[in-house]
Length: 92
Image (cartoon, rainbow, N blue to C red; front, side, top):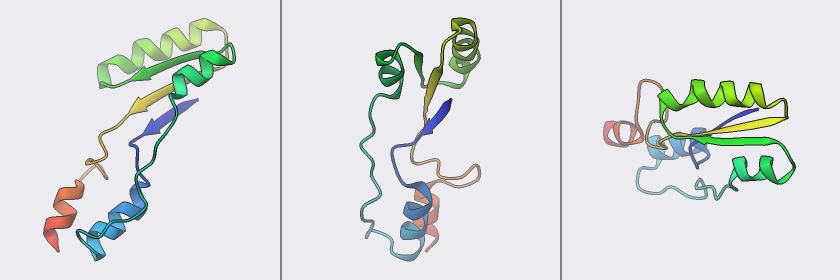
């Protein structure tokens, strides 16, 4: 399992920033440590914070022979491949 975690409800936040800049509400998430969660149940768990860390983490997960979670931490500012939250906010 690969979990992409930017720590927010991204789509809702994007719409709030676009329609109501400066008035966001209820979009920040407090997530568990997903990698630790996997390990707590005897699985393989890793957290990835940089692109070049993913391939080795994926190979270690495959080689473990266990159920695995790789949590990829993403910057919440990078809301789409082409836009940041700041760009959406400033366009208004």
